[in-house]
Image (cartoon, rainbow, N blue to C red):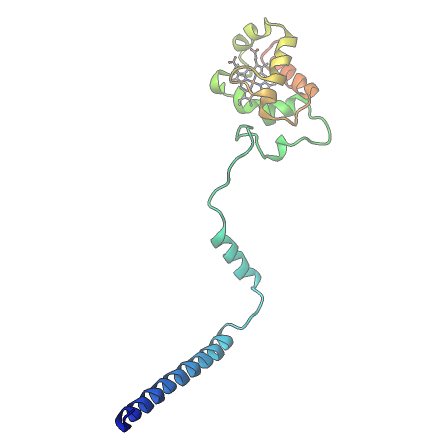
Length: 164
Ligand code: HEC
């Protein structure tokens, strides 16, 4: 190796060494600056709420086959005490039978109910429990007992000037 080559070799090693030293220095510096800037501290409630809101899913999949009007409401869950016919009608059946949704016989419309009742009260009770065509089983509310359904049916007939 000539002396000249040797010199440039030394220069190269010197430059490389300086670059490595500089990189290490920057790294250490960044570590300290970074460390001071975001020290580890628990999130405040406000920040946590904001974070949860940001990462919250935009929708949820419904896995229940209950109609939306009744699903998930407190009224649709089985309560401790049985509800009266009037309560069940108001909380569940009226959603469809109030306005005659999907062709449901309307509460108060005797003419709607008369041909239904002609099938026999027990048949109507059976259809209340098990559903028929667009009428969902238990009015879409699995928490209702047969007695509650029977009472609700009786109530709807009564309000339509009919008796079982
Ligand atoms: C999601 C809407 C909906 C709800 C809630 C609902 N019904 Fe109905 N119901 C219907 C429809 C629609 C019909 C008409 C079905 C047909 O004849 O095609 C019907 C018909 C009926 C009939 C007549 C069945 C027959 O054999 O003619 C009875 C009885 C009845 N419903 C009872 C109830 C009772 C009791 C409740 C409350 C616990 C209730 N329904 C809640 C939609 C509903």
